[in-house]
Image (tube, one colour):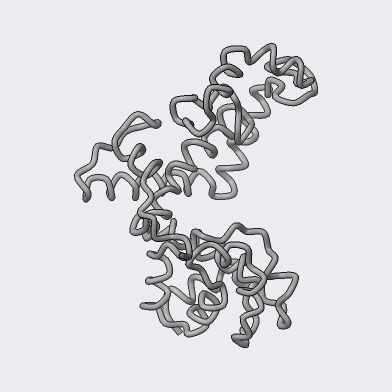
Length: 236
């Protein structure tokens, strides 16, 4: 049994996910991601079951573990009660803990998710808030989004949102004491440690690549991971 396998085996998501894969391929057949991506959840389960650290490291460095959409369709079909989706989540966490996520294109994008979504949960109480979505970073939204941002209060009123208001309602202002509680939850559960590791390993990767690294989205490394697509992820 490998050292990394032992570490993986302490994750409750691993414990709940992998009982005995019989290589039937049912999870791959039902998996929406496998239809489009170069992805096979059966292979992930079989690889982990080898308990071979070298093979597990390959997974942790690969694009593979970032293709799963966590829909858990695999859970509904596996005849042995395995949940490859949970196994992938455990592998992702281990990849982030050890810094291997920076070795793949999709893995490096975890920093973008941390800054674009994770930090917004802490600062605004929402994973997505219209105030933080700059039209310049989302050209796919087109001119409609630019117009909506210019008329955000009018749009939100028509939608029935309590935009930046006190009391209940969508997009209401989140009280500071509630934001403080969210911070405490992240600290106690290890979320803040995970955020710090994402930053630390990403900075090291940027230095290795000779790419400018800074806070927020206005730096070379963030723009690179946010926009790069090597076009090898989907099936032909």
